[in-house]
Every structure is written in C-alpha cells, then in structure tokens.
Image (cartoon, rainbow, N blue to C red):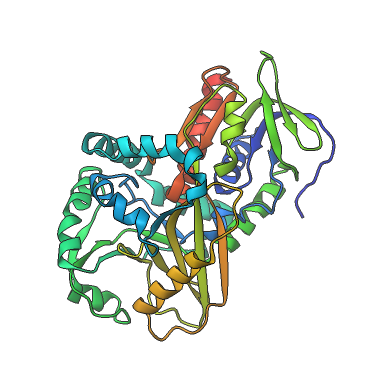
Length: 406
C-alpha cells in the first residue's frame, strides 16, 4: 500500500502530478536520497500514462505541426472522420494555441522543433531499459521495432520529408515496400505505398501494469502521497514554496510542476504564461489470446497505433483539441473502431474504451526548466504524444536542475 499522509509537513521536494512524468521524477530524486512527496488526486499513472499506445518512441522526432499538416489543415478540421478534430465551442480559448501551432508548422520552425525533440529523445530506449530493470518491470518491455504505414504511393512519397528529418536527427529508419511490410506483419491487409520501419523501437505490453509497479516502487522508497489536487502556488518566499491544495496547504524547498494537461494554471500562478493546451486521447481494446500484429503499427492516414498488448489489441491515437471540461465524443471512438476494422476485418466487438487528456504544446517541445521568477519552482510538462518515452530523460534533466540549484 502507498503511504498516505493527511498532515501538512514541510518537504524537501514536492512533485505535483502522479503520471509517468511525475512518478519518474519522484523515483529518481528519491533514489538519489532526497525526501520526496507527491500530489495526485487519482490512482498513480492511470491517466494518459495508462491510455497510450505503449510505444517508447525514440523515433518520434517529427512535431505534430509540419508543412504537410499545415497544407492539409482545412481538410483535417472539416472532415468528421479526420484523425485531427476540434471541439468548436472551445475555439475562442484555443485560438492563441492554434495561431502559434500554425506558425510552428512553417518549414524553418518545424525543422528546428524536430532537432530539439531529437536531442531529448536521444537514448530514450536505453534509459527505459535501465529504468525497467531498476523497477523490476523488464518483462513488460520488448524491442521488436515499429511500423509507420503510408497506404498510398502519394502518401509514401510525401513521407520523404519525415524520413529526412528523422535521419538528420539520428533516427535509424528503413523505407520498405508494402510487400515487405506484409512479410513483417502478414495479418495486415494488402495496400499500396510503403512504410517506415524503426528496427530499434521498444514497446510496453501493458502500460497499466508498469504504472502499478512504479507506484509500488515509490511506496518502497518512502515517497509520501497526498491524494488531493494542487490549485495554486505561492513562490513569494525565498525560503520555501507553498502549494495550496483543495483541502490543505503544503510547503517544500522545491516544487516541481508535472501535472500534465492540468499544469497551465499552476504555471500561471508563478508568472509563467505557457501556451499549453489539451489533446483529448482515445483508445479501444479488443481482448484476444494473440494480437494480429507482433509490434506497434501506426496507420498514418488514420492517425492511430494498433499496439499488441498482453491478451489484447489496443487501438490508440488521434488528436482532438477540446479542453478539459467537455465530455468524450462517442463518434471519435466509432472512428477508431471503423479504422481498426479496415485494418483487421476479423475483429470482434471492442472489450473496453478509454478517454483521457494529453498536455500539448504548439511546437511539440515539452517545457522542462526552472521558473523564471523562482528557481525553486521547476516545470516539467507538455510532452504530448511522447510523455512515456521522455519520462526517464525528463527525470534526469529535473534532477540536474535540482542539483544545480541546491
């Protein structure tokens, strides 16, 4: 059982957010001998850290915004079956994010963002292999590669841009034919075009199980868990930082904002007007003894992964911009299901579905730095689609910042 503390003591380190980023940070700092507490109102790791496609995507150097996406933006927004959608009632609040996203999708900005993402991703798979051994979770990691499908000759030709950017940023990628894809994954349907194959990619066969192992490790390290929500931060004191929660006030020498999609108001309370918004993610799962693919397969036109998990196939992805307050859209699940059946016609009925929130920056580059106003407040959020991938690297960067500011 996790250690639950209802008192309000002062801590050395207070991490806000119990997703994979916050847990990695708490784990790393506690392993270094620091006294750590963590604020999380829900079960640890059971948000986007659970609902993702299970890919350690060290090949994911391409930002969401690129010139190709910019050219197709009107069609993507207007097509109800598009992998990119917007909840139109949120457009007024989304407009600053969308304007910045448009700018960041221009050629020079997209290439600069790819380089910045590539630097963060370098060594991500190796860091996860080391971390999983520390956690006792190595049995859940598999180095079987990953496929990106481009299901027309036109789409495959357009993907030359992505291929070049990946290679320039150190990613090993093989451009293979549709026929070669079927050698790797014979249960896929025949198609035209081709694929990018990432032979060194690692995947997780049960993200939820890994998050539970993580939580148990934090308990064993003596990390205090506060099952509440942080509301705002007072950084006016030079000595300690106060965190105001729904039902109590906590103090710490250093506070780390790692609350994912919920980080924006916390950052604003320390004077940081970051352009963070929310991507609403969905997945469907189909229970089966043996999934039809042996590695994660991303359908570029459908915008989702088909990921083999333990005893099930998970269909995860798409981008829906719509904030934190609106309910899920059942149509988005139907779009996932229709796409899944196009790839795998023999699928039965979905066994379960999931809906959650990804923290998204317009340039796809996470915020990992000290607050400009107070170096004792550190920000670590905005990881978008690569949160689980970058979690160990983010924890190491935060550890370096804590040590430098100590």
